Amino acid sequence: MEKDKYGIETSISQPAIKLFKAADIDVEFVKVSAEKPDPNRLMFGTVFSDHMLMIHWSSARGWERPQIKPMQNLSLHPAVSALHYAVELFEGLKAFRGVDNKIRLFRPMLNMERMLHSARRACLPSFDPKELLECIKKLVVIDREWVPYSNTASLYIRPVLIGTEPSLGVKIATRALLYVILSPVGPYFSKEGFSPVSLWANPKYVRAWKGGTGDCKVGGNYGASLLAQSEALTAGCQQVLWLYGEEHYVTEAGTMNMFIYWTNEHGEEELVTPPLDGIILPGVVRQSILDLARKWNQFKVDERPVTMNELVKAIQQNRVTELFGSGTACVMCPVGRILYKGENLHIPISQNGLKLTTRLLESLTNVQYGKVESDWACLVI
Ligand code: COI
Image (spheres, protein in one colour):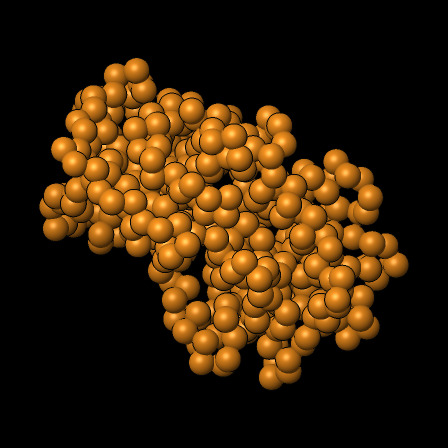
């Protein structure tokens, strides 16, 4: 039985019947382009570009021709399965305006493949990931003026696939809509640099579990995190450190993958992140950090489970050098404090600290903004 790289049998996905092709795109342009926002004053995900991509699917007819249209509201039957049973998924990637004024995406095929994986898990139709990427590139070319003229801001690309089955029956959708919207987003951190976040580590709420959807980008994972996030804020922390199981395994932080850079129990300098065992989202930045660190070959790099006991002991013994999250939105985000079992654990950030976090971030942004040549950069225009 053929499986995708995350372990789902590929035959499980709904056959598309007829695939869509980027060459068939119909375009309807806006009459007047909206005013572009100031890249220094952007609130994440609140401003949208002029156009969107829409592709309808039905089990009877397969995928329709892709359409690029003026950004608009959707018209949906009130019973659609996306709204009632969360039959939906999304992706997040960015387009960057480089120092040479060219526009690039960062390893976008990893997002396309992960989207296909999420589609299998949600029993939504499969598609050709290369063709979806071509459609997205066409959309970005049309809205290229929306890619901020800034070497810290970018254009966030949000592909979404929803079940549009107009029925209250809990069943596999026979209709779906894939759409992509674009939103210019500002830098996650201020010009002054990193501001380390605090994490609320409490096993009361669980983000994901074995056999669940933790390794898929489905909306339910995020909507169900809000109560824990609000308790974290009440407890004086900025984000949740998601724990798993009796052993309180460290999994993710907020919407980010987690990394620990420490001297491990065997006295080795090591960068470690939880393994892709079904409860961890296979982040593109996560993968890129692992790839870079392995290429540098200057310290041990490992994907293995770490318990809170191990982390607490290492913090108390001053063995943790840097602790950080990674994700598309923030790229990298250092952690300065963890509140666990009523105790504040501080990660000391020394004068020349965050060396690895800074080095990794610079290596990634150098590729994104075209400062160095790399096959991770996908040229749009
Ligand atoms: C990311 O940073 O990768 C995200 O998924 C954040 C998004 C849910 C806003």
